[in-house]
Length: 90
Image (cartoon, rainbow, N blue to C red; front, side, top):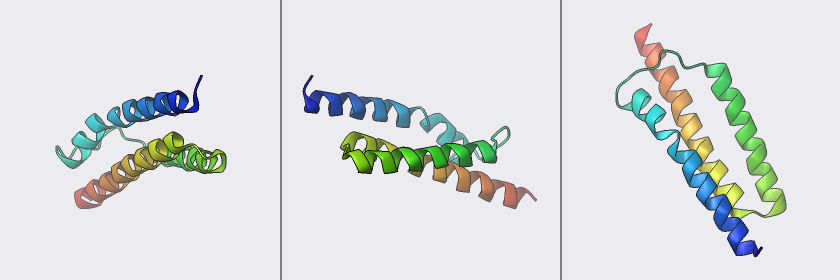
């Protein structure tokens, strides 16, 4: 299998992974809902994304780098959105 095809599979997987976070982002940033979101879990997932990002850099995989940067941006946006909502509520 060619390297380009392998990276293309990674890019498609990354896009689908990012799309999975869109409903959650909408709930937090548009609807202002944050109930049921576990910040420790989101921090753990963020840590895993950082490690995947480092791995992608080490092996030189642009699809891993791009997907994990985008997923990490979504995750951090969710974390800070939830923190903002919970501070405003208290």
